[in-house]
Image (cartoon, rainbow, N blue to C red; front, side):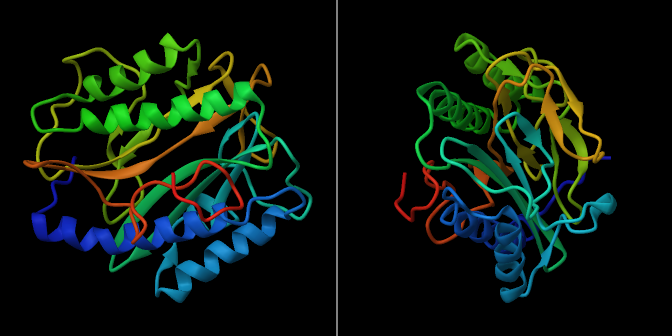
Amino acid sequence: MIQIKTPAEIESMKAAGAISKLALRRVGAMIRPGVDTLDLDRVAESIIRMHRGTPAFKGYGGFPASICCSINEEIVHGIPSHNRILKDGDIVSIDTGAVYGGWVGDNAWTFFCGTPSEANKALCEVTRDCLKAGIEQAVPGNRLGDVGFAVQSLAESNGYGVVRDYVGHGVGHVMHEEPNVPNYGKKGRGVKLQAGMVIAIEPMITLGSYESHVKPNRWTVVTNDGGFAAHYENTIAITEDGPVILTQDVEGPWCPMQGGTDDKQ
């Protein structure tokens, strides 16, 4: 069942969203060649707990970390480790979630580590724009197919693949609520959007084939062809006044594309 939130509940969700965004932003500012990815996880958890939140991912279904850190061909659910050291040219997808006041804030961003290739830079920029295109369609009266179509059409018109096996979702007191929010679809199809719905829109876009599999660690999803992938996400409230991004801090809802910097983009 889809949980409809009141305006007051949506307002309350902003605190969890702000904490999650702050953790995401601070981790992004650390992404440089030579960084130990487990250190990224420790900083994210420290920030979330410092603001009286709880990491939404740690222990969720047995997941062992506070962030997902997915590098290059890893699409989602990468596990931080002392054995994963960032190197120049990597693209690094960080997904953070925070629980505060009983509500979840969930967001993700793909950062450049050092100097990205032109192909990877373009992939990330288009995937970010896919997120923006999907958010624009998150208005009462539209359908989930309109959101998915906006993402899919932009990605595929640029020659990229749209991951099918993993999708966005409703967000509320738990991290995954109904409905599923695919990054593909047909206009006018699917669940009708109404004010009070809160959804995570999260394009997962690949340089090559969208086909994927899970690594032996039973978490990390990678592309079958080894092509790189990008992942961007915000938690969105659908309101009569248009989409409201709940995962934003004092700097706003977007992070720099370039890791290791506090510059705005």
